[in-house]
Each structure stands twice: as C-alpha cells, then as structure tokens.
Length: 593
Image (cartoon, rainbow, N blue to C red; front, side):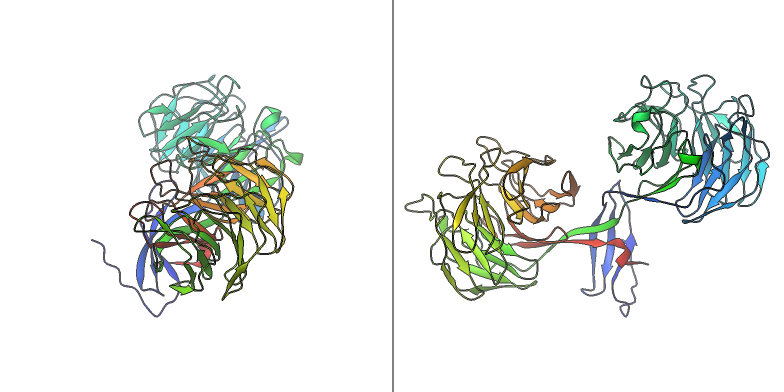
C-alpha cells in the first residue's frame, strides 16, 4: 500500500498519479477535505489554431517531438531534397543544425533534442539514419531495407520504421540506438502511412495506394502487427501523432481529407476538429491532446497548426442525504442551491408534498406543495421555481395539469397546463418554462411553454416519449433518452423555441435519467434500461461522450450544470436518500506533486 506525506499548509488539489487507460483515472489529494479522491480525466473537443510559420516552406518532410518542442526534418523543394532542420518552441520556428544528406520523404521519430531521421529519397531510396542531439546531426546505423515514405515512431534509442516505398513493403525494423533489426511484418504493405506511439506499442495508419489501403490501421506490440479499427476516411501522405491508444491523423490525400482530422482511442477512429488550412505531404508531432501539424502542400508549405484538447478532471462524490428518500422528484436549481419537490416515497409507494432545499452540503425541509404529486417536472431556481404535471398516485392515480410556483418560502397555484400528464420532461425558468412529452396515460409528444402565468402550445416532439430528461432553456432545450414503451431510447432532441430537431444519439439509451446543463453543454446520468445505470455522458451540442460512473446505479433526477451537477434520490427499490455531486474541473487549476 502506498503512503503519501502531504504538506497540509498547501491549498488546492494535487495529483498523486496512477494513470490508467485512454481516459486517465488518477488519485488526487484535496487539501480542503484532507482526503484522497479517485477522479476521471477526460478531454474537451479539440481547438485548432494557427502556429508560427516555418522559415522554409516544403513538403514530404519528417516530424518529431512535441507541440512546444517540435522538429521539422528535411523535405522537398523542387527539384531536390533539403538538409534544413527547424525547431519549434510553441510559437515560432528557428533554424537547427543541417542534415548530413539532403533528404525528402523522410520519416521522423524521437524528440527535439534526441531525434531520428529515417530513410527517404536522396535521390534514390535511402537506407541512411541520422541522429540529432539538439544542434548537430550525426550518422546512425543503416536500415536493412532502403526505402522512403516510411511510418516512423518511437525514440532515438528505440525507434520503429514500418512500411514504405520499396515498393509498398511490409518491412518493419526496430532501432536500438545504433543498429536496425528486423521486426514483425505489417499485415498490409504500403507507403505514405503515418506512424505513432512507441517501439513496443506502435500504430501505423493510412497509406498508399488509397483507398485500397487508406483506411488500414495496424497496432504493434513489439513483435507482431494486428488489425486495428479502420480510419473513417481513406488517406495517404498525412500527419500522424500521439500514441497507440490516443492517435491523431490529420490532412493528407486525396483532396477531400486535406482539412479532415480523426482521433483514435485504441479501438475506433472518430471525427476530430477540422484543420484551418487543408494540407497534404505534411508532418505531425506531439500528442492527440497537444498535436502539431506543419508544412506540406499548404500555402507556401510554411503553415503550422496546433491541435489542442482541454484536460478536465471529472468525478462523482457523495453529497448530503435527502431527509425523505424518494424518486420521480421534480428538481431544479444548482449544485449549491437545489430544490426537490414532490416524489414517490416508501412505504407503499405514496406520493408526497415534501419539498427540500440543498445548500451544497445538506438538505432542509421547507414549505410543502399544495398538491401531492410525483413524476412532475420542475424548472427555474431554488427561489423562483415552477413545478407542473405529475400523478397524485394512490388511490386515484391519473395525471395532473396543475402547476405551482415557489418563491423561496411558499408554493402558490400557477397556470393550468393544456394537457394533463405525468413523467414529462422540463426545462427553463419560472417565467419561461418548458414541459414536453410524458404519459396521459399513453405517451404524448406535445410541448407547452409557460410565461409565468399561462401555458401555450409549442412544437411537438419528433418521438412521443415519457420519462425523458430535460435541460436548457425555453428557446434552447435538450431532451434526452426516454421510454417509448416497450423500450428505452438513446435519441436526443433539441428545441429552438418553435420546433424540435434530432440531436446526437446517446451512447447508452435510457429512461428515468438525470439531466443538467444547457443545450450545448448537457449532462445525462443514471437511469434504467430497465436495469439501473451508473453511466454518465456529456453533450457538446452534437455528440455525447462518456464520463465517469456514478457511485450508485439508479434512476435519478438532476440539477445544476455540466460542470457542477447533482443526482438526487432514486425511485428504485429500495428507495434511497442519496445525493451525488458531479465536478468537472479544468486540470490547469491544479498542481502536480
């Protein structure tokens, strides 16, 4: 068991390490609570920005290093290869030591201060290897098979050279800092592929001829290549960066992929953020989270583009317990000022008028609802909320059309809905509320808008659903999941104040989930399929991505934002009082021990 000695005079959160997987799970020490937490590290969608222009524009060059310490090696300016080397410091390029031999179609590997230039044309296929120490190139061991357009990876003392134009070879070689040795053959011989990763965990993707080989991905374990997930777009002569479990492909040929990027998670390629300037015969360096794409057949061959994904720490932790355990609650507000109204309570599944307020650590009882109800929706804040619809439960059951408004101390009657229903979705505020879907007793698609006194008809949902979670505002809402009877769904719908349109599908379909946030920054968590779930997903307005699992699998209700959410109660037997808090924190606000 590891023992940590922490200076408790230091404030903030401190990473203790233990990275695992492609989405990293780490131990962190929080000085405020004097506790160690396990958190989930994830990444936002990438932002591509322009970097400093190369001094010498060129294509068919090699790339190595990182985003803040990049290396541009050789390249082609008609009619010959080049000896020029340039170094990148995160903002600008400067001249480095010249290569011994003018070379193009060269592969790069290693770092800015310990780089490799492998193979290429000079002017015929070359077996030369050169090693860079940050200022000067020196001769290294020769390749066994002379070739160009190789997929290069690894380090100066543990390099990897795969494929290449010999022609379209399957040849793989491994470098130990002085000598190349034969490695396992590629499954598919090709040239113009990109390489990433290390000698014992390498990645080779794309290549010529395209499209025959252009989507091909292979993974190397130090001795053998195995098939990986296919690229979405066939490409060749493109930039590659990253690792075997977090790869990046950018640009390349044919013309349709010049701006296109893709990200690899060790199994599957997904669409990345488009480059600002389309390019081919280009080079790459860095990681999937901090990548560099530079030179090539872009304007003047001097273009540099930086590919950045913001790092977030995300975790669920236990919050204060509800005083009255219940589910199918109407919830609203924020993580530190939440409201829970009504719900289904044990024993005997009885609906309640119970209302509680959360202050970020504990719940307190406040004024009861006028009408007992559960399966109601709620919108607004802790001091200005509206709850509507639901069912009174036993003995009558049925559905409600009534609404009630809360001012922070008292509930009063609000406007009557056009259509009575229960298990509906809700969003918005007390004076600009939205109610959609639900059961009456069958599923309904109708939407209603509230102005603080009166409900009016809005645009109908595409799919009539009950038990759908909602977030956002009256003019920019999102409805996620739901129960279409007999199955739960993964569909997402977005409302623009007039009509609903299809959004990106959830990874896991579910009903009775909790939701928080906005239309373009939503959080969906828990729910049932019909078994209960812990899974969390984040929405960016088009795509859902996985987040960390909840502590307790359950149907739940939610409040707050994507970065600071609450999961409140559960209706699944036995009914629980548990509350959980979700935190999404920018990693750069923390310090590493």
